[in-house]
Image 1 (tube, rainbow, N blue to C red):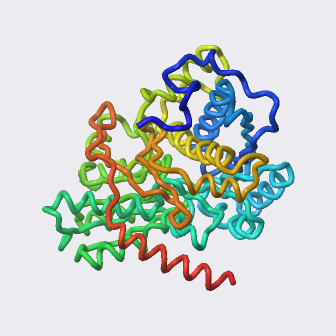
Image 2: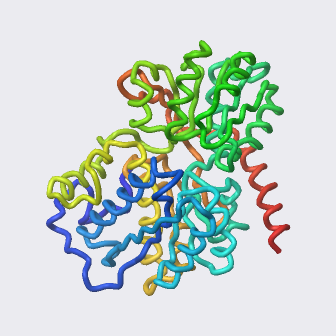
Length: 415
């Protein structure tokens, strides 16, 4: 299925020369308050670059329904207070759609966004209960949350044991920090219901000292290891896995592992490692190929061309394809001038949207701001990531149950 984002005369398969540039209208601003200097610099350059490149490509096609797109990027250093300051500053500048790309900063900004009635994009990060549109009216975690990703990993493990988790030993290795702690509730609920033997193995920030945790994992001797970490933590983990004689084939890592991490681990050492992913992997996607042709081949790209061959770049394309589609629907259905409420309604009308195969199809509604929660499992074969499953979502009943419990708690404590 083709995405509506690139439909009609500006379709992906057609020449861009046919589309007039967006010029006359007021720009539609998207505020990227990102950590560009501290913890998340392993990903923010690629995602912000992808957002700017996709906006530039769309502007060549006429923007969104004839309106140019402006991407505003500012550093918050992964500090909640600076994230709040960034939000307030960009709000004054006319931004209505914000993206923090940080779980702690997203959590800090969320109450202000809810009070002001602006849009907080929260794809692939942040609190999992934000998919509850009845409670989190202005928050859009389009795509799988950390809760959904963790549940899907357990579903995959279940399929590898004759569809039964009874007695299966699962180690959860995680950075002891809000990002790493996020899946614990869902994992415990699944393990209890299914009879799995789940044990938790935290390690401290900044993630360089994992020796003690991996020694404990070795003694536990799990059938599988689910790991919630990022950047160099994966490299440290690979050394500890080898030191403890643990097979990398047992390891399923969260989606935040990319080509740089594999190169630092060593392509052969990483062989057999698995990851849960939210997006299409690699540069051979029609949107990326068109960006390369229309921007990078003409020296108009927003950053280093090498980043377009990075999984995190694909995450950026996925996030902003969905946001641009929501704004397109807002303009088409609710008309100009745009308001946050019109954008909210546009996002809530996204139906079976897959950004030309970049993501699993998502359908967003007023009640469900996530869109389905599908991921797939890939395995590193020594040279490339190879899909092991199609897109799927597991334990939706458990995930939804935890969502409702946590969103009710949020509502109770924020009355």
